[in-house]
Image 1 (cartoon, each protein chain N blue to C red):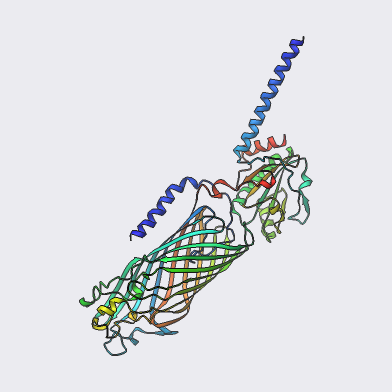
Image 2: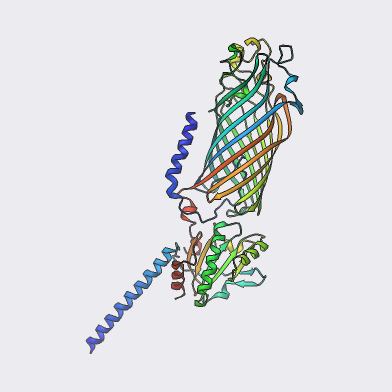
Length: 375
Length: 180
């Protein structure tokens, strides 16, 4: 929570101190060919010597279970004390995430970014002891990223650009959130399953490659990103590595608005092991005994990972210069999950984006006159 | 008699210097008011030949002897679009005084939309097309809109980065000093 407040206060501070610099904006600068949907990580590079801040509210609905590509009903797995069944089974999940991001371009080709979030998860559970809502909330991991433009065919209005991304996910999200709502008193205060923990607990390197193409009134591109999980966390496990590939096309249909369509592919691995608390205290095991079966499919580290493909439709709107709003709806096209695990139903995301020129920005001071022509 | 001639000469030269200084000051002020960067060395504006929206060839040298506002723009540039009507008003107000406006579109393939802009804004000044970006590069254009002021002698007199109100009093004053 401290970090979230810190990021929020820092953004507020920069906004207040940068207000004087936001004086002049009647200029198109060097990233005209680089428009990207705002939900794609690393999308939206600020103009040189400018800040960009992003606040995004996302709602994700997950409904019923899936094993491989087969949709399953929760009653296939319990709740039951019988063998091969689980004492608790998830029915649905609602996840709200507030994301804050800031970026600054140091040069035409290099920008630094920070992104963090606060998530609130509610999972509807049915158990042998009765139904209840499993709940967790907290900061997600914070991503620090640098994006470097490797190639562009034109600085003012590039038609082709290639950028590399490198960064790190800082383990600001917790991995030890406890169950507070379980109908059985002895289960309260025990570690929640992996999927309900907002963090990874590890410092994870991030790498990516972005290709952008512009052919007015279209923008299109591909964005590949991977978060590698190489080290164990304090609970002696690691989350699976993630790979995402986003393909997008955007069309400007109005001076102030554009529509986008995306295909978002994701592959991610399962967890390497159960948490230390599970081995030592039997958290997440039946009867709190580590030799017994898992309480729910969510506790099994191998019931994670998979491949999915979402289609995303979006509208981006510029209500005023320096302000951008975007609304996106994602629906799953394909899901192959190592399961059983909760399957994605739909995702809705509203993003607001603010550009803040500094006094060093070209939109504040204009471009320099060329020496070659006698200036 | 000699003394009278001397005093007359002294008065005339002081008046001339005073008026000259005032004119230079007014010149400087009008440039400053419009945010014009003046050259350290006045070099000839690079000549070019481009097609206009009707397919006819137009060269910068065709306008020798006139003060020229040379403007670079694109249909995707919102600030550019905003200043087009004021450029038309400036053109209408000062074309008889020897001021010419030339707008060069750097769009790669937007002839239809450029035509639409010309019709929508009723532009009567020459709008030239630079789809290959050659002239844009000769003029070192890194942001849009960018404009150059070219004197009647064909030399570059000023550089302007960003959108301006070209029909403002300050702008008209600027061009009136340029044609003098």
